[in-house]
Image 1 (cartoon, rainbow, N blue to C red):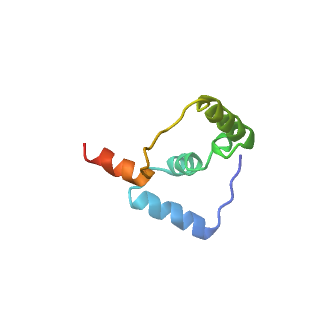
Image 2: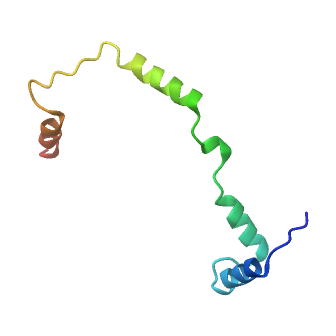
Image 3: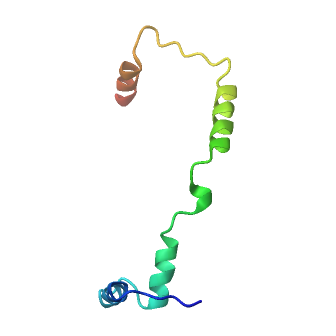
Length: 81
C-alpha cells in the first residue's frame, strides 16, 4: 500500500516522534489506527431492543415499596451506612 502525506501531516508525525510519543512512523500509524472506533462498538438498535426486552422480562413481578419516600431520600439513607 502506498500512502501519500501532505507536508503538514509529515511534520505532525515527525513532531510526534521527536516528542517521544511514538518511536517510528509505523508505530504512529498503528497508534492512529488503534484510536479509531471499531464498527462493532457503535450503537446497534437491534441489540438495544433486545437489552430492553431482557430488562423488562427480568423486572416482571418485581415491586419496590418505598414506604412514601422518594428515591432521592432512599439514596440518602443508603449513603449513611
